[in-house]
Structures are given as structure tokens and as C-alpha cells.
Image (cartoon, rainbow, N blue to C red):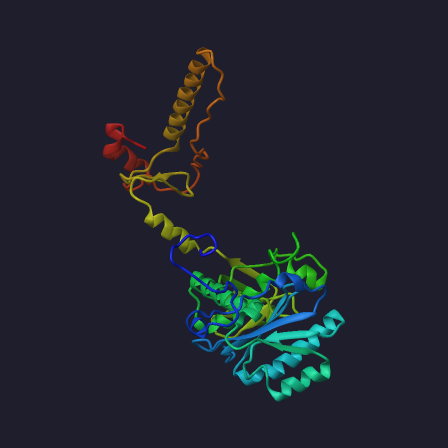
Length: 381
């Protein structure tokens, strides 16, 4: 302003700022911007791992777990989850995960990044890092952005957990199974943080994921029982249960039957969309809407059965009117694409189906037919 003479009467002896304005620091100090993370891209598995602890959950799982911990590989975005009854159990679970991950990849973990929670900075855990040659990177207090991979993942898993449980209205004690299923699904789908067309499963294992076996969490299913568990010759061959998750190291499904005992099995019959849901949708339709039924008939607002022959005639009339309209358009000199009827086609009625069409009592003998009023009035069906 002084240099351009924008304001009159403003004078300054020096244009250079040689000292810090302490009142300005007190009044307008701000946090240092976070650096761009794109310059430190890792090139191999276990080069950098992010870890964080989530919980406590409002209700313990069936195994008594209140917390869950995640370990996410930055190179492949592969995530492992462990469940803890208390925060102090993280050390034992970390040892199990560390041995498994290093044997799978054939390399040791280089850097592990976490917050400053007491479960992450214990002396025993620090001694384990030193013996393994791992550098433990901790975040600055009140700066979760330095561990944003894990800090963002845990709320996302809880949101997916909440959505899946609400979809099937399962009990709160199945939250751990829902989180485990959410992590399983996450590892099999692509991500914008990875190369195009790549999933964490492929980058971690070297194989393309196959999701044909996946089922809807919490859906009703029936476990096919072993012959020794069938009660007698005419006993049930299946037991009803609820699908939970995919157990580690087994090509099976984890299900909780009606007796509450969790089982693992391979042969199931799934009902991912219940028949009751279809019935509820039909009840919500208004009276003037048409509902298709299995018998080939439809229910209308007046409650009377409508024969499919009349429907076929109406369709023929509609088709004829469409054809004449198209012919008239063709005579006008301008060519247009033929307009096809958008009416939904209905299959012909199968008259052999045992459908009750009349409310009167069925005539059983010849005498009843000849002596009845219908015979004389000519109104026999």
C-alpha cells in the first residue's frame, strides 16, 4: 500500500520485517501444514505398516472381545484384524500376526507406524521391535494425520459393521464377526490407492481374488447335517442358522445355528432374500397396482380374478393400435423408428393348476348337477 501510494498519510521507515510480532503469534498462530505423502511411496510388502486400536465396543462379542486392532500394509493395502478382550492383549496378538506375515512374504517388517497409546509403546513391545530390526514410528500427539491410513480405516470398518448388522437385524454380540467379514471384503475389492485393476488380495498373495463364494452377512441359511446327526429315518437333514463370516485357513462358512453353538461347514442352503421380504413389498402396494402371482392371475383393486384370455385380447388391441399409429406416421413422409409397446408380457394361464375360481360348492354327482339351479338357468361353469 505504501509503495503504490494506495492510502494517504501512511509512512514507514523500513519495508523489511526484522523481528517477530509476539502478539500476532499469540493471536493468529496456526498448525504447520502436513506434507504431501506422495513422495514416499513404498515399493514392496511389509516396508511400511500402519496399526491402530479400535474400541471399546458397546457390547462384547461372543468370544468376549471388546477391542479390535488392524495392521494395514501400505504397498498392497492388505489389512489384518485381531480381536482383544483388553488393550494389554495386543502384544500376544502382534507376535502371532508378525510371525504369520513374515513367513508369508519371506521378508521382515521394516517400519511400523502407530500412535502413542500405552499398548503400542510398552517396553516389551519395544524390545520385540529391536530384536526384529523394526523401526517403530509414533505420531506426534494430537496429530492423527501422520497415521491416517489406520485412523481412517477403523471408522470405516465400524460404519460397514453397523450397516451390515442393521440390514439383517442381527444381535450386537455379532459385531466382531461383522468387522471380520468387512475386512475380508475390503481385501478382495479394488481401491483408488492401488494400480488400476488391482486388489489388495492380488498384491499380497499374487493371485486374483474370486468372490463367487461370498454371501450376505446375517442371511438365513441351513446347514446340511452329517448322517450321524440326523434324528431317525424321517429326521431333518438340515439345521437353520445365521451366516457370520469366512473362517481363516478353511474353505468353509462360519454359521451360528439356533442352539447358539458356532459351527463351520461347507454344505449350506442360503436364503439371502427372505420370502417374507417379498410379501411385505406386496402388502405395501396400493390398491390400484397390479401384483403378479404364481398362478398367472393378478389381483386388482376390485378383488375379482382377471382371466389371462382377456389380458391377451387387450394386448392384441394395443399392438394393433401401435401398428396403425406407426403406419400413419410412415405416410407422412418422415421416417421414424418403430415404436414398440412397452407393455410387460404375461405367460399364458396354466389351467391345470388347482386354482379356486368360484365361491360356490363344487358339484360331486350327476343328480346334484341335474337338480341344481345352475343346470336350469344355464349358468354351469
